[in-house]
Amino acid sequence: QPVLTQSSSASASLGSSVKLTCTLSSGHNKHIIAWHQQQPGKAPRFLMKVEGSGSYNKGSGVLDRFSGSSSGADRYLTISNLQSEDEADYYCETWDDNSWVFGGGTKVTVL
Amino acid sequence: EVQLVESGGGLVKPGGSLRLSCAASGFAFSGAWMNWVRQAPGKGLDWVGRIKSKTDGGTIDYAAPVKGRFSISRDDSKNTLYLQMNSLQTEDTAVYYCTTAHLSVYDTDYWGQGTLVSVSS
Figure 1 (cartoon, rainbow over the protein chains, first blue to last red):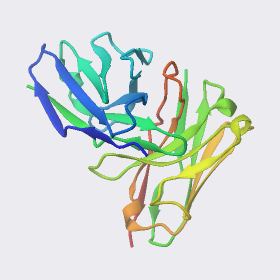
Figure 2 (cartoon, each protein chain N blue to C red; figure 1 turned 120 degrees about the vertical axis):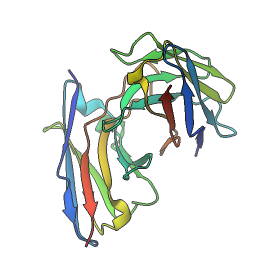
Figure 3 (cartoon, rainbow over the protein chains, first blue to last red; figure 1 turned 30 degrees about the horizontal axis):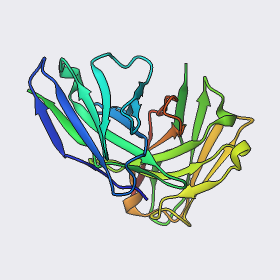
């Protein structure tokens, strides 16, 4: 079963960019992952799926400021032109034949 | 518009039972794999279990902490997903979400708004 590792926190200034990392455990570096955003007090919201090639597909309504990429076992979520509403928890998720797993989440603070 | 609406949460004593429902609309529910995911207060997201579509065998898998106590089912005629929770423990206190569980990178997944289950004496 895969394990996903995320940094607990990240911060960046208003208008700048931040790149979040989700690392797949050994032997799982071909897995597709999904990124979800959870704003304070709200339900999570699907952002995109990212595959090992680096290609990604976003959910409808997800702004162009959000993009995905990949390198080896790492999957990335980049938020450009950071806005105050981007302050949230970001979770990655993946799955195998009979289980799903989430990373611990990264709390993004907009300075 | 895709909608997932959970209901059935509430306060229950340790050892008690509760059944959650998730009413789906706006997509082909019968062909969708579905997950239950929970979030304890102030904590991260935890997968509870998954049910495949009937055409894919209807297989159900559970996370270790709930196996043997929780049961997932679906009624495709009502576009509704269920989570039967028995032998509830205080550590089951969480907001419970239903989500779609599409495997393809091209498919969007959706979340419900969640329903709160509190287990306390």
